[in-house]
Length: 111
Image: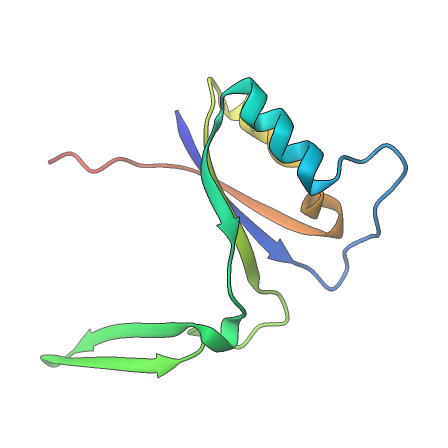
């Protein structure tokens, strides 16, 4: 089962604690386990574009759709046996303490 991790900043995040994995250690662990499919950091929200189609026209707005203190800083795609395994992996990510992880099961399209 695939899961998308949206790695987000959070103003109420905490600094790393002794024993927390670094991002390099977390990456090596999920790679070794064979559950990491893809992921990377994202450019700042100021570099993004929001794209909508309305009334036959394409509307492009600079930046994210909504102003928010928290931003999506990166993403990871995991292939896990269960939601519980995905939660365990997300909880070990450094940003689960410093920020937050929005973990979502992928809902494949039936074509």
